[in-house]
Amino acid sequence: MQNIIADAKDRMAKAVSNLEKEFSKLRTGRASTSLVEDLKVDYYGTPTPIAQVASVAVPDSRTITIQPWDRNAFSDIEKAIQKSDLGLNPVNDGKMLRIIIPPLTEERRKDLVKVAKKYTEEAKVAARNVRRDANDALKKLKDVSEDEVHKAQEQVQKLTDDTVAKLDQTLQKKDKEIMEL
Image (cartoon, rainbow, N blue to C red; front, side, top):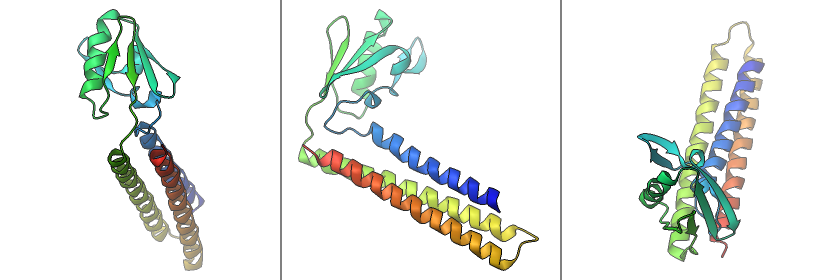
């Protein structure tokens, strides 16, 4: 029984960390390396994350710089950023690519909040699925009294409630960050 609960706890923690990872990719008014690091570049015929072909830095709150290690990668990185749905335009100065993060419009902020809410809802569904799996596994246990199973199910429910509360807190924090000017 404890193994089932420990597994549920671990899987719910992963739902929270996955949500935080998704949120790090959501664009706010600030520059962040996580916006572009995972974008795939066609590097010699292989889709490769930008972080593996260049150094990515944030010199100030509105700028991201990308310095490719290979001169031939400049145009590929530029194309990858332009094709992404980030709405960013890199400036190539021959030595590095600079991306100026424009301030977000009110409408774009509201759209980003909607996307954040969608990600949070998906994470909540994942947590509820973990709860269902754990409860099913507990019901299938032999050699355990109904009272013990009921107590374990209450533990799983409390875990689920705590996880959903964490997800909501994470959303509120991101929401505030997005709407901040």
